[in-house]
Length: 107
Image (cartoon, rainbow, N blue to C red):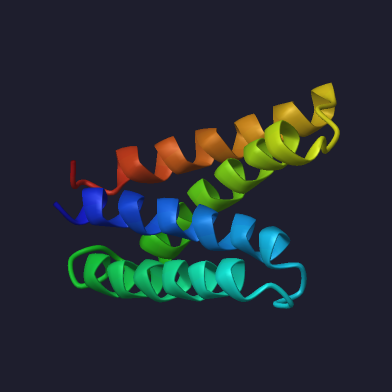
């Protein structure tokens, strides 16, 4: 169950990271509120996940999923460059996430 909580926490991390762009430097109240709410939920879920998962693994997976999701949405939503190198390095992060999960001993 902790892995599912961790994945949900990472999805909220993507939400608050994208919210940073939408909030325009916290100058727009509604996106700013959404960003703060997503941040709090993400941290609360991460705190729950680390009750059963090693902090190093949980944090690396949380940030990895957040980085992959945010970088991917940056390409899709904000016309950030989708170069072969960028996509390859996003793939390396995905391999790291899967690898950490596979060696954690908890599925």
